[in-house]
Length: 486
Length: 78
Image (cartoon, rainbow over all chains, first blue to last red; front, side, top):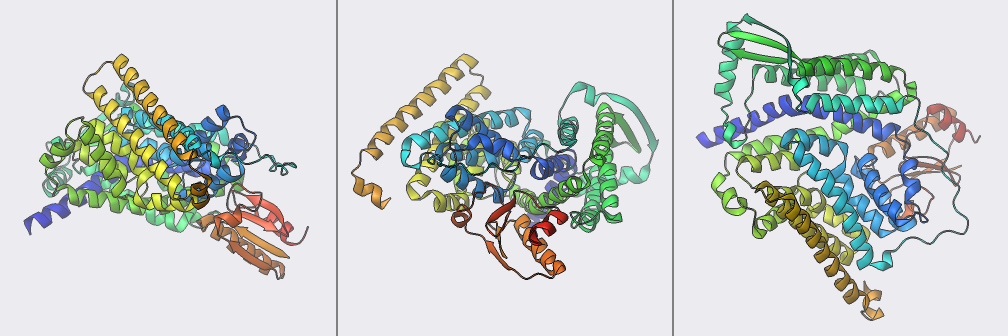
């Protein structure tokens, strides 16, 4: 019974601290960026580089860019994957695109940066590029039958030229700046500009009660719930309710509810960028460089947003809210469950399996990624849990690289598009690449020099390349009978 | 008039179908509206993005929702 209570407490506290600490300044702006990319980006500007005539050295990088910019939602990913493969640059770039989309999009990257640290986010994006292109080329080598589509005699009429709408570029830049200003740990942003405190026994008592209700152990990577956090959770709930009314039908018309939802968004972000603490019997309110920067950037975003074409602006808000509705519920449930489970996991177990940077530990990370299915982005709090429980950064990265790509569910979907043999190739390649990345990242964490790391990376790539060449020879020298049944 | 909505079941695709039906009703026109969800069938059309609207074999819009006035013009047969 006691452990059940502890478990629920841990779930609630992980949810509350998560909402307060991570969602607001990171995910709320990130959702707005994702909405803008989805609604306002002229997608043809990326896909015209992915047609059947595109040279390989253009097609592969552009496939990665496409995965990052235009594929926040899985429902865009599959049709586009199919069309790149069958009517465009072929299997290789299509695989690159498929790989990059879940790991390299703006939501996944900004969230990883906030929860696990900027170095993990950078490693994730860099490795996603390398993996995506590497695996794409390897797949194209292994299965040359899936080559690019024949160039049609009469090329289809080009899509109607669509340019970046008026003011969309500056708006995107301002939104990304807001996202960074809210999350990056930089000295000028942390600098205290103004601070005031007042005696407030009520708030102090609330702070003590919260600390008692949601006990936390910083050493295990847990976060407590503060008075500020509680207020933010309340605001966020109110925001959800108001936005539900104001933003669900915003594509048809802007109502008073829309204005209310947007005003609340602005207030909430500025409030989140304040620092409110309780020490002794006094409450303290602090304005930092971050508060000022966030407020200024929000003013800029609002100004630029009002100058958008009204139709574009409504589409942007509608897409943003659609992403929130689609992703946020699963993410909240995921975070709560992670908190529940945390109580039951002994750090000793994690340490025994993946406490060191061994091949076996990295393989365990990859295997966990395959057999556990987490909805979009939930892999990040899961990774944070393991990091707090003593998992070595190497196996953790191996897990983080493999999980979004290789859950059993996504493997099943991919196999309907690619067939069993190519899917097996894809799974094997992702697993091998992730294993290598984990080992190297772990070695870096253990203090191995950069030169050795580069040498190791090159060696690993060469080994995979040789393996792929050998396999390709084996597969493709088979008699035609085998191909006919494939 | 033959109208096809191409989309594997994403929210925007549902929205496009609803918009199309509403506009048809507002114009007082009847037409065959088919929602194509099979990815292979979608690939038969010259589209890369969904949702897409095909009116009498012509791809009118893909990858985003149309403006109401554009939609009306296409469905009026203009």
